[in-house]
Image (cartoon, rainbow, N blue to C red):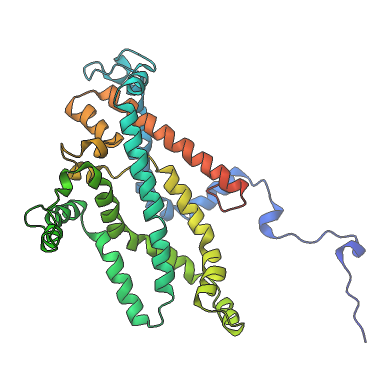
Length: 328
């Protein structure tokens, strides 16, 4: 006995669609009633929404002082409108080229040198066979990220002190002369980038380790059967598996190319290393808070944010054209 299976096309009936697709345009009143059933979740979400509105969106109202000659007595709306005067003043200032060059150089070098380090660490740690040793290595690598920036800079001053620093003591033992690292403009960038890698590479490694755990283990098993060694499995399985995460984080890093760690730069900055340590963020601090040039400093900050936005949109478009993962 055979059973004939009829298709919807043969019976002339349309197939029954799932519930979610049967009503593409739902009634607003029905949606509101469904939302009321989960009102507890919306109550829990309210503090987060309020904090975002207060600390992220409301300050945008004050960004208009970049186009005004702001006077605290007259307020935001009462201060005279000057248009792009403060932007032109910054672009035509003698410090413009130096600030842009220092900020771009420090960030670009940090991106080129520091960005691959967490990826390499994650690939190495992922290949460790002993779970105990792997957990110990992870703890050692990401522990520096919990140290305060102030403490890290204090450690740098102690380690590289020209009199009592361990580094200069080692240089003296080998017959060299002590070097005043914190007072040398040429040593500011290596110290900043090197300490940044030591402090943050381990924490960034966790993101890539999480992405590596999502790779199907059967791919590695099949590669072992085919005779692939560790390097070949890393090259053909691990790296392609985490490539979307690498692309997304690289785009985000490009979007922050002109955003630098203000606190660390300011703490490491001295009068002797200003030629390389003076960046946009520290200049905004000097002009805005110390010299009370509120409109001028706001214009510089807005100019910096616009550059970051252009870089983010550009590299996101490039990644999309290249067929890689993008932010949107």
